[in-house]
Image 1 (tube, rainbow, N blue to C red):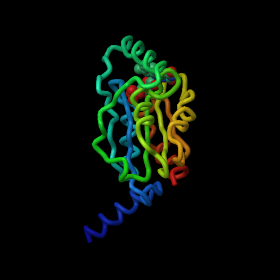
Image 2 (tube, rainbow, N blue to C red):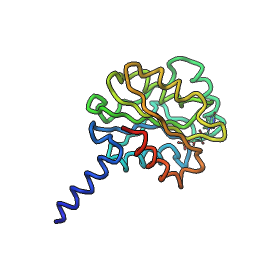
Image 3 (cartoon, rainbow, N blue to C red):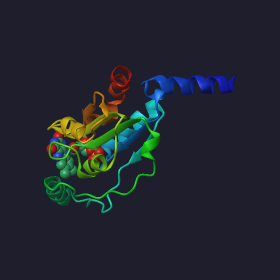
Image 4 (cartoon, rainbow, N blue to C red):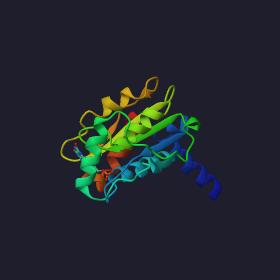
Length: 180
Ligand SMILES: Cc1cc2nc3c(=O)[nH]c(=O)nc-3n(C[C@H](O)[C@H](O)[C@H](O)COP(=O)(O)O)c2cc1C
C-alpha cells in the first residue's frame, strides 16, 4: 500500500509539467544573499522532480554590491568573460533544461551567458527563467534564445525578486500551462 502511494505521488510530480517525458535538469546562477533565483530553481526542481545545480564561476563574485556591479558590467561588455566550473550533471543525459538567472543590466548574469555559450542544446527543450528588480526581464529571453541554436525554446518565467517567497503558485501554474 505504502509503495503504491509512493508510486502514485512520484507519477503525479513527474507528469505535472510534462517534463517527465524526458529527464529534466534545472540550472541557475544566483548572487544575492536571499538567493531569489536559487529559490525559484528549487521550486521548479521540486515540482517536476528534476535535478538542480548551480552554475559556479571559477572566480566567485565579491559580496560587495559595488564591486559586482563593476565586474558584471565589464564582463557583459566582453564576449567571453566569466569562466565557469564544470557541471556535476552530464547535460547529455537530459532532454529538458531549465536555465535561470538574476537579471544583470537588463539581461543574463555573465556565468549564465558562459554556460549557454559553452554547451550544446541542439534537440533539447529549453525553458528560461529569471528574477529581477524593478527593471523586469529586459532582453534576457531573446538574448538567451540566440545562444541555444537548434533547441526548442518554451515560454519562460520571470518574477520580481522580492516576490519570490509567494511565487510558488505562479511557478506551478507556469509549469502546468506552458511546460510541455
Ligand atoms: C550586478 C547586478 C545588476 C542588476 N541589474 C538589474 C537590472 O538591470 N534590472 C533589474 O530589474 N534588476 C537588476 N538587478 C537586481 C537582481 O536582478 C534581482 O535582485 C534578482 O532577483 C537577484 O537574484 P539572486 O538573488 O538570484 O541573485 C541587478 C542586481 C545585480 C547584483
